[in-house]
Image (cartoon, rainbow, N blue to C red; front, side):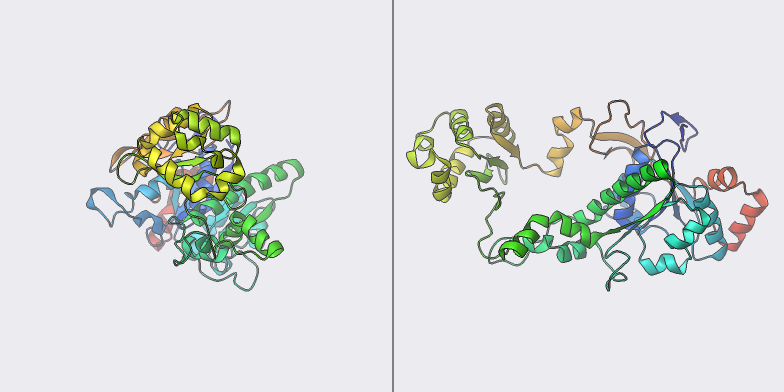
Length: 420
């Protein structure tokens, strides 16, 4: 089954061709999950309305000086390409009935509302199974659908604090720094897509669907797992006192290990040396400086014992190179090294380009722009030409008339009542 393109074109079937997904999501986490499914070829239909649209549409920065536009946010575009849109005002009872009809002819529902919202609409997993008994139903929320905090409000930074990531990120003697990016908006979306795929495969094998309940806070605990285990077993705190600077690992000590200054302002390269052989390779790559042959640095124990002096010596040497030059030099000699890249660096990264990580798509309103696609490759499938993210209700005709067989009179009445 070829996936319908908003322009009427066809693209080759992906691994999820023929799978229909109803997207009842707001903000980032749910959008990440359904974007993965859409990139894999599923037909993802986003449900929103002009009266109650996804707030992500207003995310800044907005190009062109139009902060009030619902179709110009780059973040919205990044997370919602390859999707379709039907406008249903879910606070209207008739629109809810239409959504229920859509769910009855779909395979997967992904929602990222607070649990009581779906209950108020009569769209809990239990209720939805009455519409389609084998539905795969994915819920992504801050605290999950069970426990004393299930109805609490959460966004990525809140979940990161509760999950332990905020405390882990920072230096001794300073307040928690935080991660600097809402990764617990993104990771739960990935787990949500993974759960949807596992449940869909299970359904194909044995028949029943199921509910996948993803909690941002739970995912944060997964990410910080080793530190939690260390606390439970060894009563050690990850961060205070003595959390090491830079990139140093506390679980597998190495020396040198960290980020080292390079030529230019605020330019750095991460380096990790774990074995004596790698140390010899690093010294050779740097031209065999005398300090690298000092007896106290020749063995791993000596390098760890004299870590601060070693870091200072190495830093004096790395300043001679640009960060990418140093990375290439060390990597060619078998030493793990990576330039600390800015967003601008990543946009021009030749390795990402070779991997086709960024793809161009045309977004009406601000032209042709790059966006990322999922970071893994299929040997027999390649993401086709990306479709721009949908304007609200742009696929009403397809969904209401083609999928649900509604008449023109019915849709006119819906519009008159403010249901669409």
